[in-house]
Image (cartoon, rainbow, N blue to C red; front, side):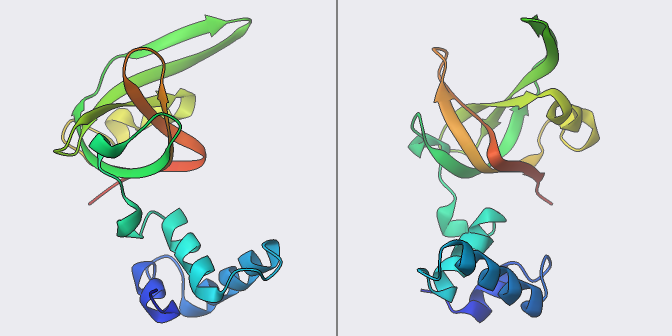
Length: 153
């Protein structure tokens, strides 16, 4: 298991060592101190999408997974609006390819605005804690409740 120092190096641009340890201590309290510092540190680094051993290949994804993937945007799809039971919104389906397979990335409402501003054709993106579903048209991934999308440099 990596040391706290090794884990911090993976996220040192996000947290100072003091902040990193402070967050670890707070997370340990949430788990009633049942988890050691290194385990909680791995959880924190993983949450930030920095623990690369936690990144899955698209070909490995299965319905119901919560996964972090890194891939290239190969299709931006079309922006669509919808209205359902008095609610309205926007949705956009992008296609991602990591060399092992492709998957549809579903962006809802304000996330659709990332296209053109941050995401373009050929962008490298990381979907952190994405939720994998199959709605009858093949697998798709979208940021889960605690998920996010980051454009990689």
